[in-house]
Image (cartoon, rainbow, N blue to C red):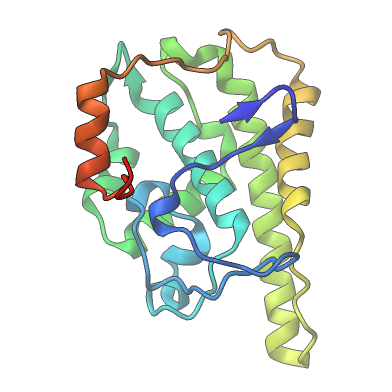
Length: 207
């Protein structure tokens, strides 16, 4: 969710949240605690080390998941229905390694990416972001090689770096968003709200 007043974004999926001290960039949680669908998981969490639980979860993994959702929706959703080509079928049915290989192939050949007619307006943004993630992965691989060979620490970028990169891609493409994004207001009947409170123990003894 995005609040225009504060200019802040909120990720409201708190059931798997981790408590962190202010200023902490990396939560005390590793990749073996996977909850995402493989087609949308970050590359780090799909490789051998990630599957073994040796990769700490980072903010950029969530943002990268959002990126892969855009790739997926733009590439195979038409009229509200998924139409899977070979690439996306392999991501659904394949192993973690299969998904990793398909994603790597896409990053290395961003020109092969196409959208359905419904999402043709997003093609430039998604393609440019594919190119950005490709360069990031190349830089990260180089840094990891330097770490393994010479012991040079891998400097992790702050969360703002990745958000700013997404914003810059949209600005560079200069493509208007083809929809109005606003807050969703839903009226919940009082009886249904009470059932929800009771089920999740949200009501105090005084209520």
